[in-house]
Length: 578
Image (cartoon, rainbow, N blue to C red):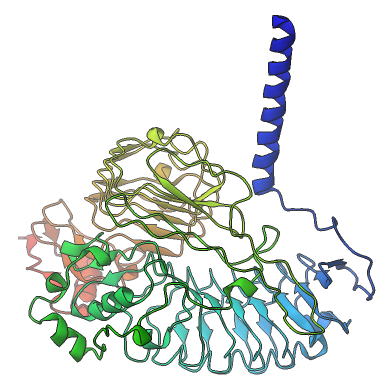
């Protein structure tokens, strides 16, 4: 009998292992599109693949080598979704989509798009969703989105957007979800959101330093359910009070993640919400600050109070694991903060309400499987790819090996504000899916060669605020996908030749806003290929070096003379020749 029970237990364990393996595989394997397909009642288009799902016609033209929309010569009489990811379209020309006027969703992600001509979207009056993620767009003009009056969802993350004109969204009155994370946006123009009623706004990973109240935050109104502002270089001075005051007026659950100060130095790494107004603006009272910035006084009237459960169109959006959709990452706060109230699940509704519109299933509100999260951390699920954001900030970790159990499919790992001193090659053995790793404000002084070899998909690496003195090529082995590298506020004394040569996709490198090179043994410093790239430098300290004032030092002299007089700390004195 004991033997029979043992065999039964063994079979049970094997079934459980198979089940776990299947679940883990489902997190990384796309769901087959052929299942649950209905019979086609429209022609397809070679070389694309077509299907009918949930009463909608889907045309899959991903990775087919298209260079122009005009190559799609077929048209369809019923509402359809068009997938055009990973093609080679560099530009969208005027009237490109006139023959595709029944499209309700178009996915143009991963096309290296650089330009959208005026009137490119003419004819797309029923388009609800537009995906422009992972392209090379650098501007949204006033006329970029003409013709998209029904658009509800716009995703343009992972571009190089530096400028958005004030009227870019003026005709998008139905826009509810706007995703602009991981761009290069330094500021948002006044009245940008005047004509829209957003429920979700994602501005993470840009170059925003402040958001004004008048003409900006005052237009992000009562319909807001979620806003994400992380990973921006916020300047926590008097001017940031308008953002702090606005945050105090919106529902507590609306802000996802932290707003971490970049400057001034004494606030570096701190959460804006934890800093008292009197510290941000010590010379003025709260009422004086708000009055000077045009912020209205809080009213106790219920009529002016923000709703605790906003009524919005959120539930009309369809979030699935098989397509690129909006990333929700409801991060849990630190234990010392007041816990966020749980969000009530929305009432499922169809995406296309109306008598002749096909219904679409509501988006998922809970993860399909249990989340595996390291002890002491908080984790949240991205509905779009079933990836995790793992928040282990300020948890007292001394080693990354303490992160147990290891999470499945972690995409973002925050370890800032811990006590980590060394990074080893074995630390990230189960984090190959990471696209962001934040190790800022630890005590890291040693990074083993090849420490990041298991992170082939990493795009952003934060090592700011540590004690690293030396940069070598071996430190960055394996980071072939890295775009952003942050090294501000370290103790860097040596950068070896070709230190960054193993990161071919590196776009932005932050060595320090205040470059301290004093009291070293520099005889000269190269401008070409080194100093010429420090466009955003605030201060540089070159004192107490034995400068050799010969012909070789002329480029450095000219570079210093081109800087503001307040940027160069002290004098640069010659030690030779006599």
